[in-house]
Image (cartoon, rainbow, N blue to C red; front, top):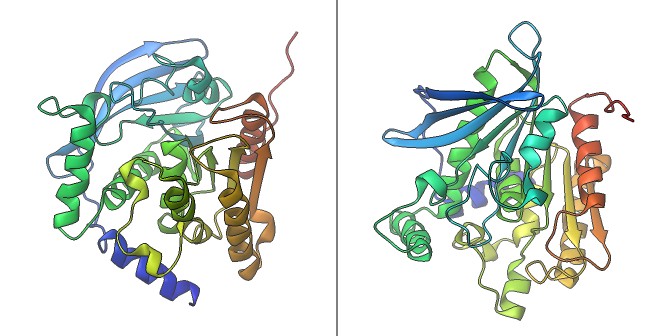
Amino acid sequence: MERDDLKARLLECLGGPWPVGGDLRVQTGSVSARNGFRTQALSYEAEPGDRVPALLMVPDGVDATNPAPAVVVWHQHNGQWDLGKSEPAGLAGNPMHHTGAALAKLGFVVLCPDALGFEERRDQSLLDREAEEFHFLRYLVAGRCLAWKNILDMRRAIDFLWARPEVDSTRIAGYGHSMGSTFSWLLGPWEPRLSCLVGNCCLPTYAAIHRHKLLHCFTNFIPGWMRYGDTPDIAGLSAPTPLLLNFGELDRLSPIEEVRAGVEVIARAYREVGLADRFSYFIEEGVGHVLSEAMWQRTGEWLRRHLRMPEPEATG
């Protein structure tokens, strides 16, 4: 199937076009000074009546007269619905995933939003897993799916950064680990304003899900898509946006046999549009579902290259 036709089929499976973005109706909260940057609590409207709480981190010295590149960091799932934006923002959770704070210290403006069902967007009337199922089914009966909603919310995050005076709107990227990685390659086909994307430890193909009987987060499941392809075919539609994917050889959530086949599908999609060098992947031997030092090093190199940022100065 031709690329444009495949993308059209994907949009049908997701649930059709997204509504035209309107006023974000940004509401701002407290600002706190941290080591090398400041953090502001805020929210913006994804859809009428549906607000997305987020944390914005701005490096010291960055403002409207000295704008910087920006990165949206999408948090993981990990069955921790109480954690969302606060983990990558470095305020809670596993220090391994304090990636938004780390990027802010390197000079990037960073936005960490809550995904639907997490942290400030939890539904307190339901148990957390039940709430996730409810959201998936609510969109399903409307002819859409949870991935459709997640993509809408991510596009609104880019709208927010695009309009910020302290952001160089020609240099915006997305990064995520685990479910956040899924978010990155789901968004890729639909957001031409991105300079690059990085996904860490998540490419759960339907082939692997069925072979291993995996129970994955609901955003991975797009009704009807297997008539046309698998998840790597979606990631391949990210071209021409530069895309880096990192994997752990022992990651049971992204079984490596299917990952190895999947990255070849993505690589072929980039080759077919004459941009083979814009897709890269890394499989680290002997590790599982983690953000290793080697993965983080490659993430930083990819972001600096495509956002045109200098190497950090050596210390000590």
